Image 1 (tube, rainbow, N blue to C red):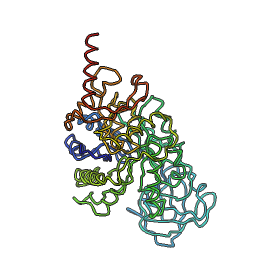
Image 2 (image 1 turned 135 degrees about the vertical axis):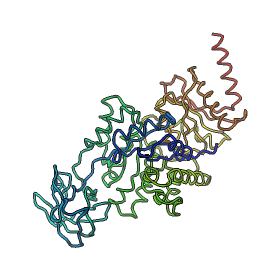
Image 3 (image 1 turned 180 degrees about the horizontal axis):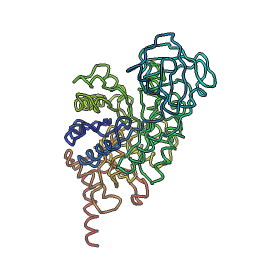
Length: 491
């Protein structure tokens, strides 16, 4: 089975999403669809979800919220498209809760408490660091700032204040509307932007809980506060996205690789999917081939054993979307061939998890697949937890997860090395999910009768959790299932 283990998340825009387009990306290696709510209407997002699920209802959809951001207000019309500032220019900065327009004398920002929260000496980075202000003094009403880096200041550009905690809401009104929309439109993941603490995750979860939604929360780490509270954010989240765009503005460039590595290691130990995002193949927005540096960036993420890598503009509006996904798939397959590096992580220190039995049995199955000539690991799962735990140990063999629900199948599409399939057979006993798995394996590549399977299952029904690991040849499994079928027919 020549499948890549690292999954690919691809961002789609409503203006180009057709069934043919989605099929091309799936054929190229896309596993998860992402919708960026910052650049789409609710109607446009609905079009994407409906089109994707017409192609294949098992494709998961991730909705990315805009998150709480600091932005400058609209530039006054008298300045045209922007205001020119030079190094050393002085300007006042004030908070705004209405329609105040930014001028050459006063820059307004969309957070009313901005003056209260920002101290003298702080740096304010505008438009991903294209312009930089330093706060030289303050009054109760405004900050007096000096341009350290000049340029053209344009309307509604983002603002980062490294190392300073700003009193921003966990969920904006726009985010709330989109989260409520997502609960009604078959979305599987909410990727919440600018998560600073577990409180931000809980605010999203409270909205989901109002309707009993099963949507999973992916927390985006993109500022220093999020890094400082990483462990509590991981604990509160289903998964983590390393959003290197804004993180790269808040941190020094040379600090990003270590921050990325630390986040990945913590997520794997906690059995949480982790995604690396931002400009992975950015040159392919306009070029049919990536740069060597971009290929090395993707390869480095795969060497770190991430669950998924993500494409943004490359597939949302780029000229070569399918080629970008194909490139990422080829890099993944090539890097994963390095057997010396891609050894199972069965000896890693396990953090305390809520389901220690599942974790121990998952590790045992991966260890067995390392020591014996096992073809693949097979499991059944209702919530997706067992598949996620097996994935965390990063085994070398493909994991076939037989899912009892479409939701479990979708969310496991994000987990490393897992091939989720939906349970087809109505018979419900501790072994019959294996028939579905073997049907799938037969279609993907003929199973030999002497092939060994490592089986992770439960003896107490689909709600009883994992209770055993079994290793058996295919012929013995087929014989046992046939005997059970015969006994059921007689009864």
